[in-house]
Length: 51
Image 1 (cartoon, rainbow, N blue to C red):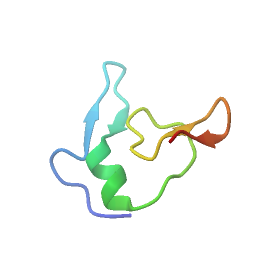
Image 2: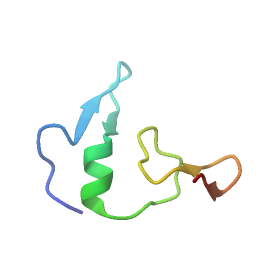
Image 3: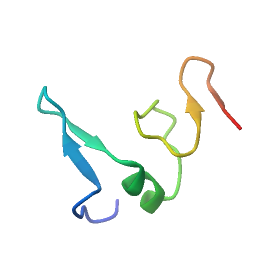
């Protein structure tokens, strides 16, 4: 896991850490968890990647 830097995440109103597109691109792969800011286009409902 890359070191977290400013812009890699923010805290939701509920207090959860939410990773940004910047973080996901640095990580370099999709975890297929349906992340809110997934730059890879994974759709958790269908289990497929959008083009």
